[in-house]
Image (cartoon, rainbow, N blue to C red; front, side, top):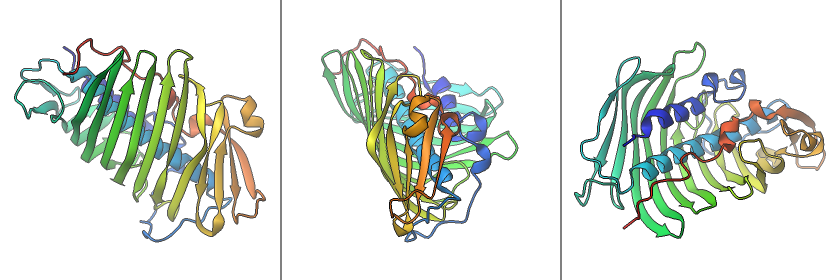
Length: 328
């Protein structure tokens, strides 16, 4: 059988580092001092584009981890595993998969935990050390698919890039993930991903995110929404964000509609939206700032989506066919 951490881990880790193909302008992600927990960030003409990019990047990171957890679960669920292998990484170090098998049936089922471990594993320009734990808490067979819940933990996952100027990342995250697959849809819900570090490369602070992402293969469209709180050292404090309208579009392409609203100190509001001239150009999105909440825009700019978030976020969910093995 295949062991999915080999390729999926590399995909995930690349998504976390702007300088390693994760999208965004790496020069914009400069480290800042830790933000006091009680301070609301002041959003203004000088940082509104950065705020929008950071919020989307953190949402992409949370979904990237959830997608890894779902893919691992989908590949290993109910498959006789036997002795799991230890891999030698291309540039040195090791990567391994371990199963905590509560009912001793040599397969992954509810109550079991998969541990993905990296020990100074050097591949694709990254050296990685740490653990990702994927605990399957519930699993139900549904008509044409599966419905399961996962408790995901990322524990001191350190990623060091070979690329000069790209900051190292140490990620710590706890997230409940609910995934449902039918014959026509993939639905991922992250009900409060709590980052204590590593929510975005080159930044300090914490984040709590809620993501609802539905892909419909019949229409080849998606709906993506994210909300939460992002505490950023670079922005100087906390911002809250909500999706007035979910981002929607064709699977594999950037959104053609939707928006996200980011609020900071003194009623300052940033919007990232498919509006104005950006609505007619699928490669762009409009960012605006109202620095004092008076309804008058203080600045606006049309951004290229590739400098905001990787299109990978909107790709079709990998392995949608899954395994033809029923959940007990």
